[in-house]
Length: 272
Image 1 (cartoon, rainbow, N blue to C red):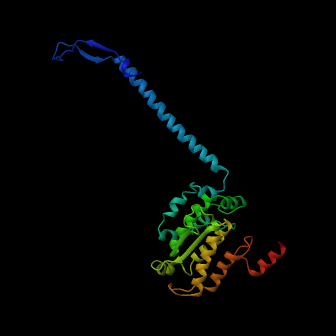
Image 2 (image 1 turned 180 degrees about the vertical axis):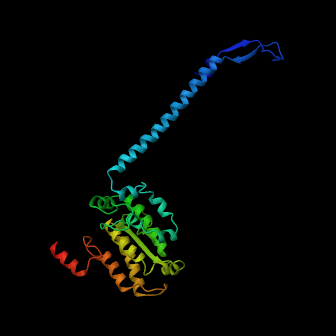
């Protein structure tokens, strides 16, 4: 009902009510007002219900889309996995990244299980690996995670297209540069070198390669190799043992994990 349907009935002034003219006082008919309010209330509620229904349907569709995915893919598509999202972790401080030990397994998953896993299924299976290798959006999200961890380690990370005038360059057309930041690296290196972060780096390199990001893995390894052979710009020396694991992660057949001994790896390669 609209306002044109409301009837105006002339009524006499109520007791004690003054009329400054001879014109009758016009009051909206009570029944008409009730109908109008009820009509508008119904329309408002109907509109609200429709909006809520749309949101509910969208959320339901999102849940359906994520339902068949691995925990890793759900996490990288924005889902909350046991109280954490990718967006939240990327905003953590360096201190929180240092002292929290169960996030790196989801941020950079590998085929092997870990005792510190946030989710029991936070590993790379064949379907998850295939999804990362064929989905540019997933790789973009992982590059954001890589950029955050490199900043934690004191590195600068840049992706430069070989042709600056061409947008949407493929991975093979990118020139990736990872170099120590002269201002932040010395302090960061005092924190992470020769610590549990050495294992994190092994994981990151292996994860990048498994997910089809060989360019980033190769450049990160190149930067680490330079640090291993030169102490310029950093206060500590990377141990030979640590560098062996990084080299295995960067160069071994992906079917062979970095923590497998060279003898076992050679024996496995002969069987394959």
